[in-house]
Length: 345
Image (cartoon, rainbow, N blue to C red; front, side, top):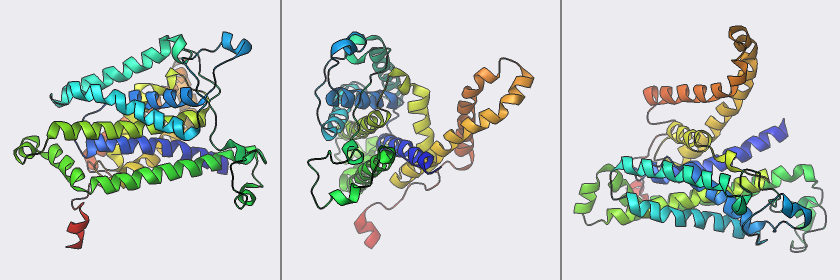
């Protein structure tokens, strides 16, 4: 049970990073991004390519990739975030000056384009087959005296760890990244820059009249949110060890993130994190529910049990509708006073 809870917390933490990125887009700037899966996939595959080694020997006959730089985990994470940011810039430049629906169309098209490229281009990241061998960060801590870089005074802290304890190490690493992302976002979004983003969201014309470069502000917010999504993808890839295009379907990697943000509270970073943990709990719980409903589905029709997994999306969709009807502000809701100076007054 403890191992299951640790794994649950890891996945929820990854989705919390995605929810924070979407919160910068929608919650603070009003950017209707429904292409979260695209930036998520870019971060995952980029980090994998930066940290893995090129296949050699007989493995090269079955596994292909554009490059393998064997860089450290931190380099892979930063590369994943930066590549997602760089791809966000042309998408934003092409659409952010137009109406919101153009951004929605562009982002969902971009996400599907990214997924289909990774699915069909075998030379890039093994195409339809999984990209395997993604290294686990700090795995040497659970393999005995293999971490030569570890200071001697810290070695006793990890002396008793075994490979089965690795999820705890990864959870600690992910928790530090999530805490850092949250603190940096809180600092930025409570600054004049963050208040300018809210002004753009509420009334872009009025913000322009006050001398704000709204196009630049929206592009900055779009880039920052995409960077966080890329970082989340990098952590996801290194935890899964093996990834392919199926991990980045729009229903799983976009729709679910939107439900997390809306439930937790759009415009509230703590709400974005809370919503990720709650909805991931609901999502994992529906897997058990569909198993329990299997006899009933079998009694109704022999074909229904095979469609049981789709009931999970139905349950989440119904929950989403109930949230919008009865709790539109989410569990925490947006804070009206965001400036530290305003709080002191």
